[in-house]
Structures are given as C-alpha cells and as structure tokens.
Length: 92
Image 1 (tube, rainbow, N blue to C red):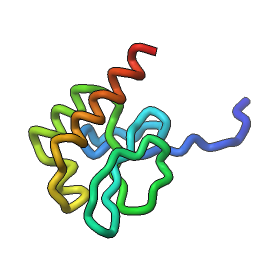
Image 2: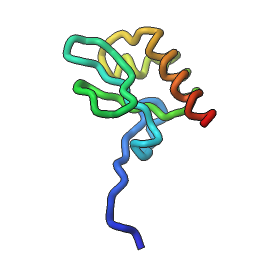
Image 3: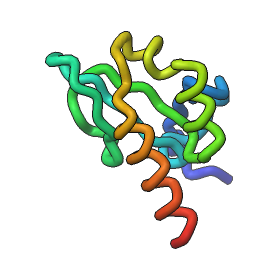
C-alpha cells in the first residue's frame, strides 16, 4: 500500500519524459536574465528541468532546447556545470 504521498514529477525539456523531480536538475533564469544551475530546486525565477544524464545535457547543448525553454542564451559554463554535477553523482 502506498503512503499516499505523491512524488513530484517534472518534464525533462530534452527527452519529454515525466520523471521524479529528484532525478532531474533544474536550470533557472532570474529576472535579470542570468542563467544558473539550481541543485536545490528552490531558486526564484523561470525554471527548466533536465534529466541527470550526460546525453540529455549534450542534446540540450546541440539543439538549444534549454535556450528556447528559458528564452535566453545559455552560457557554456552552465552546460559544463551540469556535466560536472552529473559526473559527481554517478561516482557516489
């Protein structure tokens, strides 16, 4: 029997899959137009979720899906930080 607690699902902007929020990373655009990775999922601003896979990040980079979703140019450092986070988690 389930405990009745719903697992929050979010849609990956790259794959279109609905996945638990915990298995994704949030990228945020602030009101000032700055883009940052939001590992806590609590920063203010427009957010987009991406699956925690290197493939998803590379696809997002190639297809500009994050740029379209957040309506802003995504700096290369954001993709690098995403990959770093994913690699660090896969080691643990």
